[in-house]
Amino acid sequence: MSQQAETGRVQGSAGPRRPRSAVVALWVGVIALALNLFLVLPYLARGLLALLPAAAVVLATGAIVLAVRSRSSADPRRTAGRAMASAVVAAAAAAALLAVFLFTVVGSRVDQVEVRGQGPDGTTATFSSEGQSREETWNGGGTGRVATAGRWAELTLMAPADAADQNVSCQILWNGEVVVDETSGSGTVTCRYDEN
Image (cartoon, rainbow, N blue to C red; front, side, top):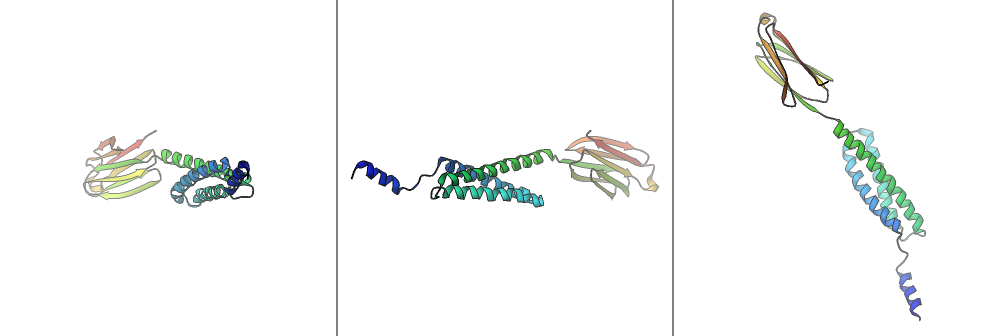
C-alpha cells in the first residue's frame, strides 16, 4: 500500500474537519450567552422586557449547538453558517440590551434629600418632591429623608394657630449639602430647592 493511500485513510478516519467559521461561531455564541444570561436578571424587573434577553439566550445556545454539530453534519459549511448567523444575532442583541441597561443606570440619577425643621410642638410639616408628597406633625423639630430622581424639593412648616407668632425654620440638604436655610417669625416658612 502506498504512503499516499495510507495518509488518506488516516485523514479519512478523523472525520470531516470543523469549518473555521464554526469555531468563531462557537466563541461568539459563548460570549453572547454569558452576556445575555447576565442581562436576564436586571431585565426581570422590567416585566415582559425580560423576554428579550431570554430570546437572545435561546439564540446563543442554538449557535453553540449548531457550531458543535457542524463537524458531524452532512453539510458542515451550511451548519456553520447557520451557527454564525445565530451567534451574530445573539451578540448584537446582547450589545443592544447592554447599551440600554447601562444608559438606564447612568441616566437614572437618584438624589438623597434631607429636610429639617424647627418650630413649636404641633408644627405641620409638608414635604413635596417630584411625584411624592407627605404631611407630618413635628414636635419641636423634625427631619425627613427621601431618595428622589426629581430635580426639586419643598418643605413648608406651619405652626399651630396658638403659636402663629413664633419662629420656625427649615433646611434642605441635597446629597448632604445644605442648599436652603430659611427662618420666619410668622409661624410659617417654606424652603424650596430647584436644581434648574
